[in-house]
Length: 140
Image 1 (cartoon, rainbow, N blue to C red):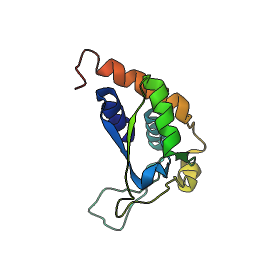
Image 2 (image 1 turned 135 degrees about the horizontal axis):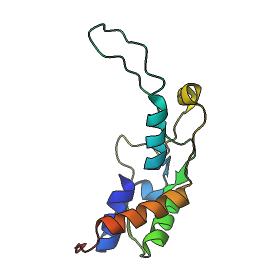
Image 3 (image 1 turned 90 degrees about the horizontal axis):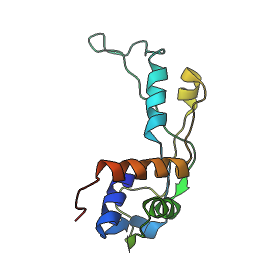
Image 4 (image 1 turned 180 degrees about the horizontal axis):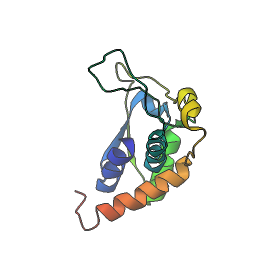
């Protein structure tokens, strides 16, 4: 949700909230990559679970194993939108973690390797889509 929330705020001229004073790392996944993974998983349905009355299921971590510093993400987004962000640096939120990344081990066993769009390419594509989707709207 960060790309959407940040883009909306940046284009409105509102500050974006950066927790832990922006000292965070996140593993971002481009939607096209996640969609491709879901398509490939159709050929590998789960076998079953502990409840005979429920449909088979499994939990998989669909994502990239590359982390991006949050401030780098913001820089890329600013560049893609062509607008600098006003930044509100805040302390760490209770329950949050400074870094996330996906463990793709089980997913790779099921479908093999899959593309991982670079953060630069993904953010540029998102920003172009976001602007087109909201074309004509007053961002305020």
